[in-house]
Image (cartoon, rainbow over all chains, first blue to last red; front, side, top):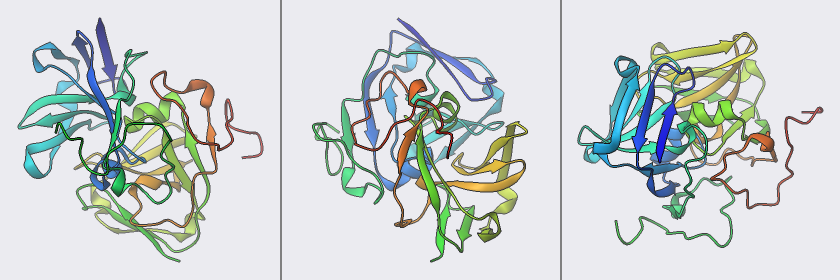
Length: 133
Length: 133
């Protein structure tokens, strides 16, 4: 399957051949600020299958500790993808067009969740990172 | 109660010297794409209670329509506030430091929610924005 995504203003667009994998929601304090939300919604992509279609010149990168960073549209502020050591690592699910045919499989760093968030019952959750990480 | 918050890179900070109210989880397509997340959580306040305390020069305002827009950090992309006719009237709860002293009260625009997100709490749900909100 081919997945496309874009920022709010539509100037930055991308496509991913072959779908997304390992969708997760991270509740750590950094992700809450990066997404300005209760948690992230994020899935991994294979770099070789990811391609910017338009607006690459409008992307701003913010790199934090450990070489992990985020890329967002400088015009509208939508955060589109995560980068690791300069390469695209995953995409934010909120910027994907349509149904990516994937569901969030795990909630990580729930030990750091916001006081105001209600974590659903019955989901796979970890106080910190998932063991395989 | 003074509420403090800021962006991921900590260049932009704000304070609100009065209470927050009307906190909703908004699932509309605009909010999902703007945050890159499953939904957005905004809280309202009295606009005269709001001040930028640092980094105002890094704040970028994106106004897709005269009725509303948002402010984000041009360095890290965190969305910090929502605007109404050019005035800052809402903040993203994800950008607040610590406990904001309030929790989301409902889910709005549930008719537009992402296919990959299930609402698993017991808060009231509205297909769009309730007429009394």
